[in-house]
Image 1 (spheres, one colour):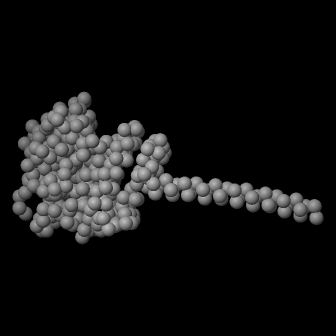
Image 2: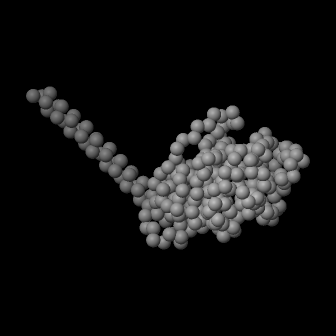
Image 3: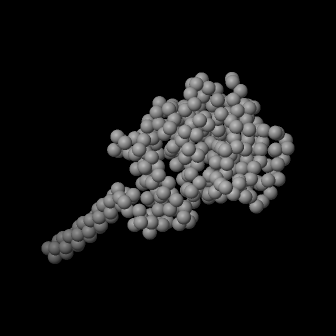
Length: 322
């Protein structure tokens, strides 16, 4: 196998208790030609002390603090990591997730056979709660090779689902073509970034011989729609994706992928920040129309049910008199 450098980019914030597990999964990689760039986003705990023990142990680890020229948050940290990275391939990894020992080697073996800078590769994944979790990988419909980005979006538009970011091993040229992370987004930023990466790829490969683990409880807490700004950012994210999708696939009037995701966003916004629906009524036009129709049908059903109940009462009175 040609000895090509892989840049592993890990943004970190107050992860002193978990970053060691993540870095151990990097240290255990069977593929040895990697650099691991840990970008601290302003940790207040002793994350830096934990990370520095790995830097001292292995010169392939590098610890940076996010410069103020990059926005606060994981996106800014990842973009700085991309700027200082030297690898021909990029592996994004969150500071509490894990890679299988053969993740880099197995995916590199598949990618290098293709001889293309614009092929993307994914792998199996599963949630876990701690390192002692017994993992069982369920078969998913998107565990397959996609000959084009459109094939991928069409399937996800039908069945839903996603790949966590660390499933992918990405040629850096593909990222440079697609653009770096959007630092203004607070919610679903990985969806927007990977939409660009996937839509610019020529083929999406799948490696069934390796996997990644996605820590469940912590990611769910981070992903909660717990502020108005996050809700606004979520809507803006999917406005961007919709515009990009229409530009990339202008002949796709059905637009299953974006519409399915917009339905999910609409339902989440309706539960937590319904006031935003009026401000974005043009964007959610289809969802609002369906919702209004469902409400009308529900009201009609109640009225018919009440009328039937009254008719039954009247019939009962008539029969009793007879």
